[in-house]
Image (cartoon, rainbow, N blue to C red):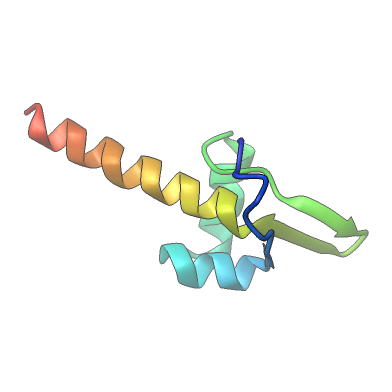
Length: 73
């Protein structure tokens, strides 16, 4: 996913992602493995994070995609 290079980058944990998108961590992992959610970044062997901008872009696409589908029905 392409983000604005001038935008500050913020790493967020899976707990923060879960709060932000109202899904459980296990649901986020399933979506990620299925290729339906942005890939995480491995900071270390035991630390995985997401770019907040990637998560927000996914949210926008999900929202506007759902609205467009509802508007066309």
